[in-house]
Amino acid sequence: MGIEEQRLSEFFDRYAEALRAFDAEATARLWGLPGMLITDDFAGALESRADLADALASSYPLYRRLGLDSAVPEILAISALTDRISTVRLRWSYLDDADELIVTSDYEYLVRDDADGLHIYLAVGIDEMDALRRAAVARDVDLDLG
Image (cartoon, rainbow, N blue to C red; front, side):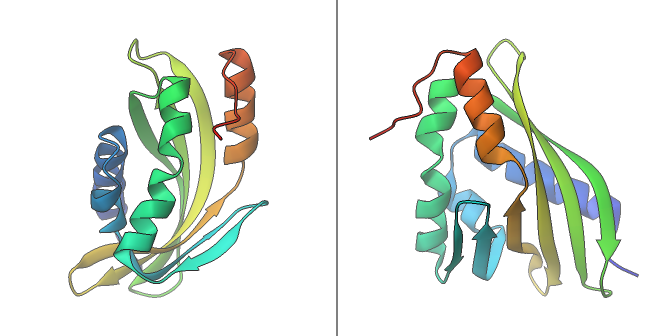
């Protein structure tokens, strides 16, 4: 029961490739609609691919300033809710162009196996903002992007 770990691993590798390329449209295609993102500081449902792409791209300026060159997903846990729906606890490791670790951040995803493939419907940011703040301090990067 549930989505096979190999399929989830390949799916999040594709997600990482899109993130490495800062390709918000490709990343948005990996989401189902509506897609929901929730963190300690934000909660929102995004109804269109364009809205998803805009929301995803909003983090790119900070990632670039921190020197992100690569994102490596590591599946920490999978819980099958049904045959087609699983939650996935994932750790992202963000690396710079020298393959030095910038920061790690954990997310919990709700993934469904749709007729056209896997899609994320909910992403819960566990510690991303705190992790990015620590990375900014360590790299002497101003978080004010305004």
